[in-house]
Length: 270
Ligand SMILES: [Zn+2]
Image (cartoon, rainbow, N blue to C red; front, top):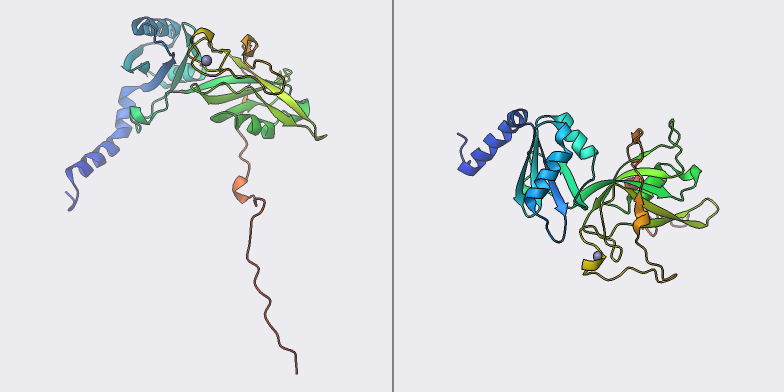
């Protein structure tokens, strides 16, 4: 025993060293949450999840907290298919699924994160690239990747990206994209496998009839922003490129300041 170590410290050390072994033993655990303002019957939710995932082998689903579930799979392959195959929809509600790392407690997980395929319509062909992917990804919690339209079968007529969004926030609608001729054009986001959502506030989890939020209306044209057109048809998956890391750290920001050394005073030579 090391001098000065408390019992809690020792316990932490023991747990840390045994994590690797535990990972081999327990299979893969995911956690999921149903985004629903008025919770449906939990038993029915679990039954429907088991039916949806019947092809992935043995699936154990436990409700651990309000509308939050732990999901245990026998192997990594089954877990990957469930995570990458999402988002899932149960009774019209979005169901988020993520990996639950052994190193994190339930309280450290964000149950509202959900991954979607987004189709960005209105992007000029020459701007379907990593830079535009970064601009679009900035509208979401995280850009997971994008499809390079130059790959075989890649030119679909829209730019397809995998993003992670916070299901409690209104769905991002689109961006104004700057074109090379310095004009801006509206790029509209459509979502594949989009669950029912509110056409008034743009949030998942409730419908128009039960909305507690203000209606989102464009100040300029008075149009209602949200509608059923935001549900896109599902596309076949192609190769996904990872986000491009722009060297933002090395960029010199506007109005950055620096100190210029005063010139060394030199007296008139005599
Ligand atoms: Zn609403």
